[in-house]
Amino acid sequence: MDAIAEAFKEGGWGMYPIATIAVFVIAITAERISYLYFKARINKNDFVNTMHKYLFQGNLQRAITYCSSNRAPLANIIKAGLLRIDGSEKEIQSAMDEMALQEMPRIEKRTGYLAMLGNVAVLAGLLGTISGLIRSFAAVSYADAAEKAVLLAKGISEAMNCTAFGLGTAIPTLIIFSILSGTTQHLIDDINESSVRMLNLILANRDKLNTSDVQGAE
Image 1: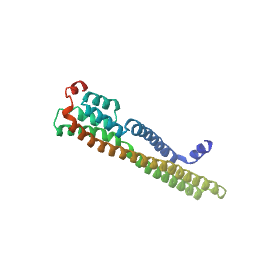
Image 2: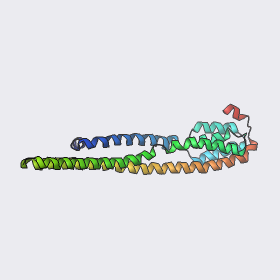
Image 3: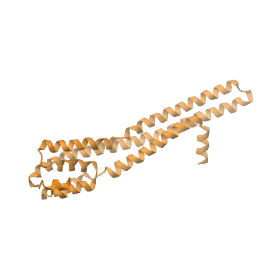
């Protein structure tokens, strides 16, 4: 830790914007992991199979209650369709589409900022590098012969530390962005597939369902 603190100090002012970027990256990553891997994740096969059982039995109330207990985006979308079970096929589809428009942005939000922050970290490191080199050569041009080597080494040290810190922040950020983007796309694909399966399932079994259960569920 002492070595890191010393390197940060030697990096000069350019280290502070990179450190700020790193803080934002950590905060966004923590929030996205919490949402994508815990709140939004659902076993689609188990969900569809359980819903199939309730709908085939004609137990609309249990199906709605099961969706409410999950609170994942997929469950919310299906619940919206079930609450309009007494409407036409188009009305059920519209209710599910409307809920999907609310849920999808929650899955995708903030992840894109990681790519931007990774690129900004590289540029901030480059700016700190250029600043250090400019200061180094400017100081050398006016310094005594005995001080030139020290000033030059100090400026180059500042430049290289900024470069290293910028790249050290950007590389993990872009890796995290790629992982979270893949997870996001996987969730969206699962929702799209399962929503179509569930819509067909609802329409195929709607004659067995007691639509009066919807009033209590709402």
